[in-house]
Amino acid sequence: MNDIAKVTVLGTGVLGSQIAFQTAFHGIEVTAYDITDEALAAARQRFAGLAATYAAEVPGAADGAADAALARIRTTTDLADAVADADLVIEAVPEVLELKRSTYEKLAALAPEKTIFATNSSTLLPSAIKDATGRPDRFLALHFANRVWVFNTAEIMGTPDTDPAVFDTVVDFAARIGMVPIPIRKEKAGYVLNSLLVPLLHSAAELAAFGYSEPADVDKVWRIGTGAPLGPFQIFDVIGLNTPYNIMVHGDEKSQKIAAWLKENYIDQGRLGVATGKGFYDYGATS
Image (cartoon, rainbow, N blue to C red; front, top):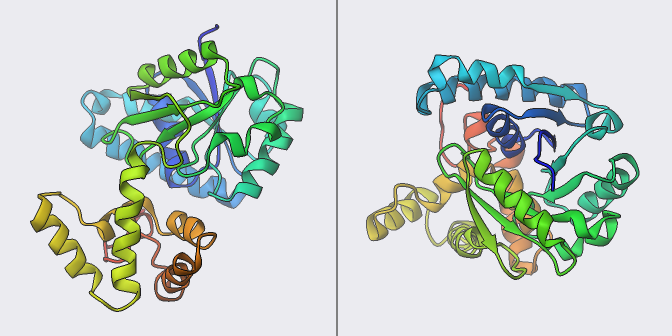
């Protein structure tokens, strides 16, 4: 199977932007796609911020490598143009099954036969999407964690239809861009990381949403009791509140009540997490 030389990232939110920048930082040409010029303007600000962060935190990035990564990223709102010559498309659109399926239906008609499709979905099974891709043998999940340059696992999970050679190609790609590949041998909603993390975050949100304890106190207990550097609400802020909201609003009755609490008290108040300067905590001005 050919090496992956051109990558398209669909969706330029917090994690999509990080995936694009991490890929470009390791020498691969990247096209970042989003649906509006306004979204891409925000993405270009994120890329500039990531260049500064990498220069400060990643060894060797201050010697021009971060700036070189910026030069390898182009942006577009034209989906056909974005995928015209892509070897790999990484989809990072919101965690809504219907939206992901409709995205792949469009991709199936536009991308070359050679193109591998990968979803960065954090909770959905790739089997729930595969028939919309038009190429189930060249489709799989490739999941990144937020702050990819630090928390650099890449979980790779196929379906029974995924070509083993495609799976191996994506494992190799993940290693090439500085990630630690974690092959997952059977489909599991939440992969490894979120199978552990999501129940923690849900339990923490339940404690606060239903009035048992304040977020800061929940975090304090978790940090003291486990030695973890961050509490669950600090993790929520790093992830960004839109993603857990989108997951919980489609969940059971309890999850929907927590989602409504998140929306009323935080999201509707513009408190979306670290990326916006405030979430459960205040972080000051953001670029």
